[in-house]
Length: 335
Ligand code: SF4
Image (cartoon, rainbow, N blue to C red; front, side, top):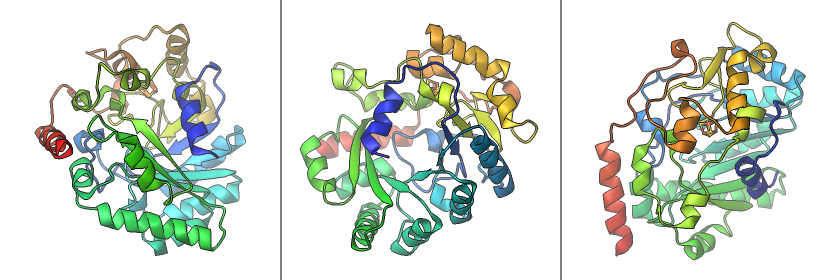
């Protein structure tokens, strides 16, 4: 599936009926990067990995409901999940037409890429968010520029040489300090099948530091923020590593969890009253005090949909390490 179309479909969603089209499995919420625009490093929820039996069970249920696409990622780095290739094979065996994932690429050496491709992966998207080494270090929180660039180039060359159908994509999250479109195009155009530039977003409001990375006076930044209705609420089932069903793949603290799939069938959970109310709020564009209101309207004092599944966190606490890196990035890119 074309990358730009997929992103565009997410941002310009207008249907409002609950039909399951896509499932996202948070195979792990652990990560080996600390990107300045990602709330993973502030997450206080327990770190863990998905039980593969649960994953297989949920995948089969979603398939039986008509779902044909599965993304094997959410809030963490999927290549840290040791059973990833096995899960890709399971997904293809069940019958999924499109199996995809996003990675920061740090562990994507050629051997791993070949394993993923041979398991049946249809596309891999590398989150690569700088075109020079110093900016990369400040943004990703580690000196991985050369490794990830090498991994990207090797994977793309390998797939081209062997005429493989797997797509190698890049997403570049743009900040006001690193938004040189021509430089980005020049850097990525010969290194992947397709790349997209995505304006940095507020991570459902979990990361107030983001306001220092966008230009609030510029239409480009403001028009790209999340709008209502949000498609995740209507057509995507996001499953956390614990086996909870949440409305959002960037629900770092489980504030939008509406069912426990260890206890309930997906088909029943997908239509329960809690998500029904949230869908109704999205349709009417009248959100109450939930995470979506924080995400779209910047509303404060929000509450989880179900307290028992969430880990409460005061999001207003600013991370000094992120702020230090943002300041360094502003100085570095001025040079
Ligand atoms: S928090 Fe709600 S509105 Fe924001 S991306 Fe997630 S589901 Fe969509």
